[in-house]
Amino acid sequence: MKELVNKLKGDRVIWSFVALLALFSFMPVFSASSNLAYIGHGTGNTLGYLLKHLAHICIGFLIIYWVHKVPYHYFRAISKIALPIVWFLLLYTLLKGTVIAGANASRWIQVPFIGITFQTSTLASIVLFIYVARYLSKTREENEPFQSSLIQLWIPVFITLMLILPANFSTTALIFAMVLMLTFIGKYPLKYIGFIIGSGIAMLAFFLLVAKAFPDSRFFSRVSTWESRITNFTTDKPDEDDYQIEKAKIAIASGKLGGLGPGKSVQKNFLPQSSSDFIYAIIVEEYGLVGGVSIVILYLLLLFRFVIASHKAPTLFGKLVVVGVGFPMIFQAMINMAVAVELLPVTGQTLPLISSGGSSIWMTCLGLGIIIGVTKKEDEIAEEKLEKEKRKEALQRLIDKELAEDDVIPQEIYDEEPAYSIEDNSRNPMNAVLNK
Image (cartoon, rainbow, N blue to C red; front, side):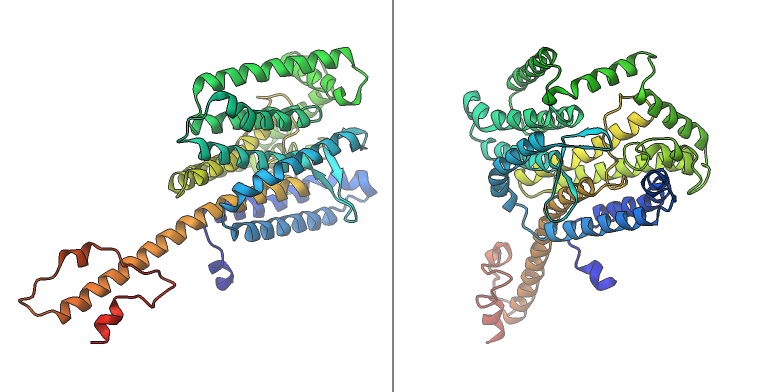
């Protein structure tokens, strides 16, 4: 076990927080899957769902391990190549979306020969964030005109958003907000950001007008759902979403301070999506206010660690990648928890690393692998610098022994960095001293 841990490079604190969230997820998923088990085969046996979640988590950690070994600067070129591929997948998703459990599932595609569904918008968001980070790091010192950034940056952003919007408004809004945050951190001119916000609002208004003109089109079928969710949030009109929120609030109120205990949730049998979108309500019901606040604190600590990793990243691209890929995970978690306590309308956002689901876990792990890869580079630089300092000190000690007491030691010997690499020892100046 110790040997395996030593193979994990990068920020060990991030590794620890991710492992804690993943380990904690098993009990809530195992408990909340009972209603799915009854609906699926009538026995209420949730062992199959637990094993499925275990497989998803294990594959996710393999993804983190594989990705964190890839030098993060490779993703600069990968994002530029992957963006058109993502557009194709998003368009295919819109055209080939199927109906799952009576709901519009146009945000999912079926992976051939494997039999699993995949949410393409999660992959698209990661690729887009890295693409934006790449552009901002490339043009930070060049001061390119707005027309150039409009073509190279904002047109790809809006193409991606428009392909996601018809099926998933909340994800589109989250991605757009995170891109704006990333451009602000990357010191993109504020007057241009204001223009982009206005353009985004205008495009959304145009989309809604077209949806009103063609209400029967499948591309605009989700618009009525958005309207009903906003209406339910602002009024007392009863609806299916209102039923979900009421059950979630009952679950949270039942938890009190210490909770009912692991596996003893009552509302899991009545709350739809209890193992995914509303799993936070089940957590509070079973583990109480203590468990609910602990989850919030854990996500905030992970956010704080992302800030530290971004600050320590050796390049501007690395800093922006950590912010662009890491911060949306935390905001998604906060949105999920805010929906459960009715601070926001129902959005369908999952709780990262805790909610059940394959592609959502895997894409979260993909992003975490990239972030840890950035911190791994930082560790390698620190180790190399420490090794150089040790060699320099050893060289100075050897030179001091070789020179007589009345000899003058050239100052440049102490100031000059060794003109050799750690890997190549053939030009090591200590060899000359040792061979005297």
